[in-house]
Length: 469
Image (cartoon, rainbow, N blue to C red; front, side, top):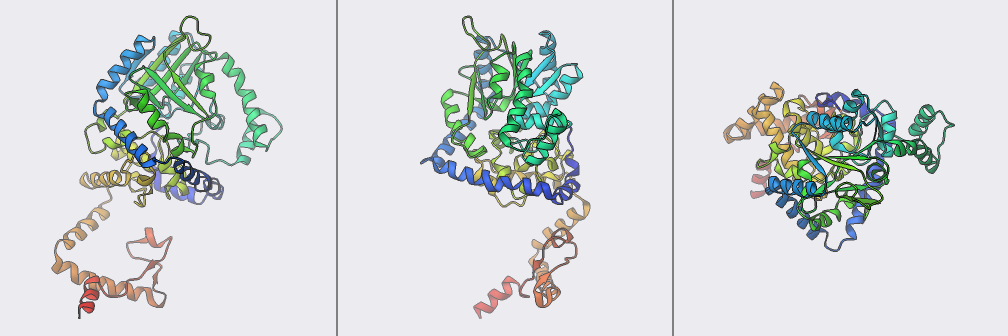
């Protein structure tokens, strides 16, 4: 997936004008936000659980190199081959090499956001290897001209049932269905032959466990098991280096938060703990197991002011509750990760100069921080990115000049006070009898879409002086 984050403003306008998209995105506020509220209420000790999970994630990140080496040692001891990739492109090359080594012609793939970073499908197809997405949402996107996902948990949340019905009828060449159980059965009928004939399965890894060398995978459809356990002789898990947890006890703590924060479920429908290839006497599992650990810019956040972002467990709660994402969807953000998390991760991974608008794509309401199970201070991180843009001169010159003028005036009360007195009276006059400003000079981005209430005409200091008198 190519980075297209420089076109955020233009795409935002298009998405806001898309009536069907606006209707489809209502599911976020109508179902998942309510579901999360109900699911966390089931825990008597939600805040204590969250604190414990944060502490465990921080402990892993504080000694990331040591825990990764422990994971590699344990996984290798159990027969898994662990490979390291500095960049997403290198990770894709490693997966292609694995496929060629084993004579693979078809790959079934479970949903993985790291594989989106890697553009893995494109690299495999360029090598002449057929790739079949098995997550229902990802499958829908794949047969729709390889459309990128709009959400990290529900990749097809931007589409309606009618749109999917039309797509299935066109691609599957079958009568159009509108009943959801019948539509999912139709998808299964097309996917099952691929499950049974694939040479290699590829999955992500929600977490990797250092003490056992295991890969933990959460899904709601069971397709991951078909990619990793049933027919493929080779299984490859791709995941970020930050996903390591020291112990199974740490995993149990974080697992209490992940499904509740993601989809409002108490538990995921399916959970797999994959530890090595099939052993002698076992009836299922792959003959060969690989784990590809991807850096892709993650190590650059260690020890810095953005390290907290590495705690992210990819639940999607921040985007589900974000008023900006709820209106424009995920494609507007232009890369793998949308919403508040994407507005921090994308500039951090691909360079702040390649994602100029994303740090500004937030109201700073703080809802993302409130709902984040890992207590990541997303508004603070977005503010730091904005500061870095100003320091590097990456914002428009008018914006930088205006803020410098305001900053200078604010630090000189003898100038600031008379300016605010004049501005307050002028704005009060502009509002007239309605006391609403419909067109604000230098503020069209605000007043084009909403009216601005006028001030009373007096500054705070003037009102305070009156009260003292």
